[in-house]
Amino acid sequence: MEEKNWIRGPIIGRGSTATVSLAITNSGEFFAVKSAEFSSSEFLQREQKILSNLSSPYIVQYIGSGLTIENDKSMYNILMEYVSGGSIHDLIKHSGGNLPEPAIRSYTRQILKGLTYLHDRGIVHCDVKSQNVMIGGEIAKIGDLGCAKTVEENVNLEFSGTPAFMSPEVARGEEQSFPADVWALGCTVIEMATGLSPWPELNDVVAAIYKIGFTGESPEIPECLSEKGKDFLKNCLRKDPKQRWVVEELLQHPFLDEEDDEEESQIHDCLNSSSPSTVLDQGFWDSCETSKSRLIQEDQEDPFANSSIFLPSDRIMKLAGDEPEWVTTEDGGWIEVREIEKRNEEEDEDANYVEATG
Ligand SMILES: Nc1ncnc2c1ncn2[C@@H]1O[C@H](COP(=O)(O)OP(=O)(O)OP(=O)(O)O)[C@@H](O)[C@H]1O
Image (cartoon, rainbow, N blue to C red; front, side, top):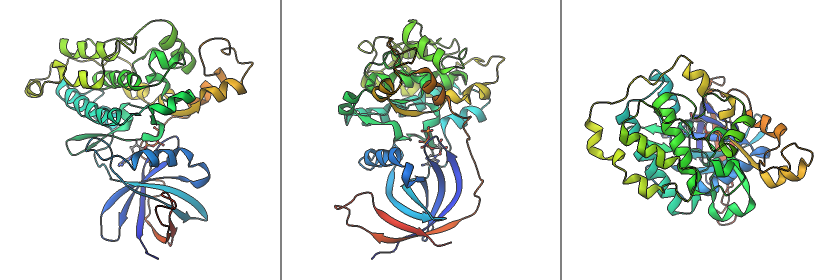
């Protein structure tokens, strides 16, 4: 039996499905570990299945997975590279509420490279947003593949992602495929340019889904962007998913020309009187994973049951969740964990058992 010890450090992030801690191996290498109690680790295990097959500088790198026993609880863990620069969401907050255009251009190019890598492998990320893009050195890395699915899985009519970033076709309950990621990328560009939600006037998930899916309206294109930036965004936010540009086309858009990176920022003050952090932190920006077919069956009395809106109102409100916490250090200590059993990976890819020893 091979022993592998590592030490769990402070919590560095908390999402709706898991907690992320800093960790260190006995040889002194830092990594991040995303954990959930085994009994509620279904989404984490799904994420592991997808992440473990990926290797790209633009996607957070998977290291391994395993079970630990900590405080008498069985924990499922995904070990991955530690991305030290925080998320683009954090960066927006710490940069006074928006980013200069050269930074937007550079991060957008890198997110697109990450999306190209995923889409080429038939994977839809389903939850692109500034919160899920982390910065490691100079590189933006897409993380949180907890909502990701392969295109074949779309036949299950599952919705996953963040309501405010839903594309019109997804809000209407149609297919959630590659164009939905492109729409969410457009929303992420708006976040970077303005520090605001693509729909800043909305703070209610039901209203957001109605507006996105059924009114024919599009998010406002920020005035502060250059003409190239505006055109890029319009092609991300085309309402018809068939007309929306695909990632390879967007990578060729003049907005992303490398030489423009050196130009002085053309961004003007995009901030308005509302506090960007307040809007960014609204709960309805949280991710959710759910099955619309299951919800429809369970909620026949729902007022939306006879419309194309697939998320019953009471469930939608649950999706709003609590205000997200960005960085928590409630468990500031370091706990050593020890692998006590390692199964043959061919028997069970997920099962590297480790146990807390301190
Ligand atoms: N590899 C990493 N390196 C550094 N920080 C990370 C890493 N992975 C995640 N984090 C931090 O933890 C936070 C939560 O991670 P993540 O988004 O993967 O969790 P989640 O439960 O899937 O969240 P969500 O509610 O968006 O589904 C991130 O916003 C980020 O701040």
